[in-house]
Length: 135
Image 1 (cartoon, rainbow, N blue to C red):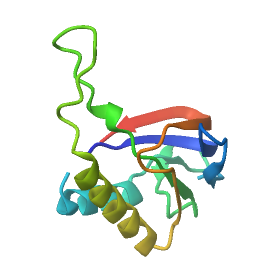
Image 2: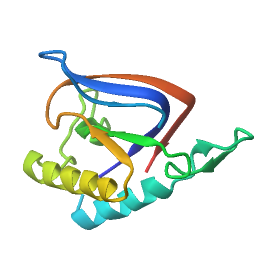
Image 3: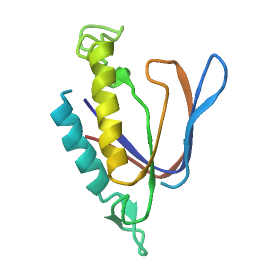
Image 4: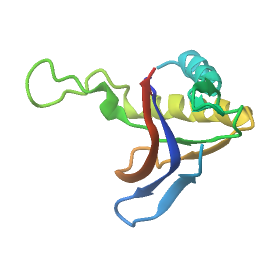
């Protein structure tokens, strides 16, 4: 499991087929791995303090999360120009890990919205910074 963390002012995700918004926020591999990543994400100090220094966590600023599954993070282009996704988890296992990860985040009390697992989605974001970190 990989995370791409982006600090945003707002973000939303909608399905392509019916243009339905399935998740929207404002500012803001194994089940054990997903728990560790959830804990790390909640404590990650990427939010700006009063001096615009990245020193606050999501919880410190009462932020929100938009969690969208994205198997393409595992794209391997080392063998040519067409990406291979052989390293991505199979759909059933990936969904179980994703749902467990989301559940752990929700247990923290942070507002969590999600995309639509396995569907093609359109994602709109207003990046803040920009700040993008891969864990």
